[in-house]
Length: 469
Image 1 (cartoon, rainbow, N blue to C red):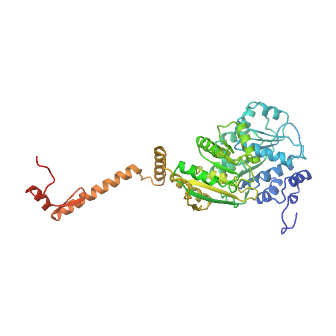
Image 2: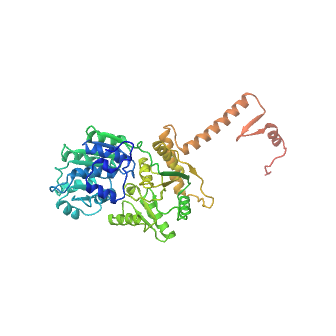
Image 3: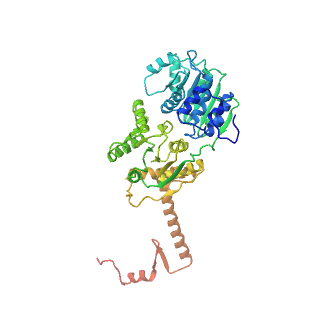
């Protein structure tokens, strides 16, 4: 080992020459903090619970020691199993293995849904050493008797929090019953909600906990800011205004919650910027999603509009900006969206558009990430549109729902207005009672005072506006 005062290097981990050559060719010289802490403990055989943001090098942190232990092609069945929540991430991890093994004889593949299983089954049956995949497709191949899992020695759960969000717990539990009990387990997550803690208690044996940054924090290299924007149309206007600066906003991911909004924003950007945009969401076919990400990586397109399905599957080092067109209601998703920029020691920017119904969620996100975002003023040249009736109703209902959640006694805006009118009526009635009790010469009519003398004048033939019959 090198001296503690010297800069750490990959040679400190006693990796083989084949891996060191591949690392050098990829341009990596210094291990990241998560790699520096994880690799020695994994090489020593410990179970690992790693908490690290995306873009910190956690994929290599678990791949390098596994590649050292798998060493070369052997047998027919997989010896290492890596589970990911999305097909994009499965493909990304498989690509990382390819990058690290040009000088090693190791068979690997990724299996995932969105495509028919036939080609994947044929690849697996030819023999495999490391299998990457989504839990649903792996269990499907196992059920078809196309996959044997009795030789698994290493199991990795990558982005475990996302897997729990997507409801993969039953498939993971099934898998734990099938694979050998004697194995090394590694779990990685950017956040550590209670459900992931419970999974780790079932899955890991005396794990070493590695936390290079506090959980649910956003990357230090990312500058974050927000705008209060009243409605959808104004968000569009602000987005188009910002995108006019092509030099600053050179490669942008725009995250939205709804597939329909993703399609609409994508079409609008396409018209305004000569087709330099792709859209990805769950309804897009696998080939379409893969091509979109590859076009974005290569720089062929400037904009990628995506729902959260893609928040964890895009590994592009030079994303200049992430735009949160909507505030995510699953608060941990904010961390993963923002993690798409500021990767690999590059600086990045994240901008969030917040409408009145989203202020509540943004406050919760700020509590989670322990940062208060600076609020910028909408530029004077951006037109503030009026929301349509349906959007106004939706925002009002959502604000009501949030207030009820925080205060069980809150009855809603309609009841609030009704209560206000009742209070005003009771106040007037009390004023009238007090005036009568005091024997005053005035009465309260409709909230205004009118003297009895003027009233009697009208009765005795005094000035009156009433027409004579």
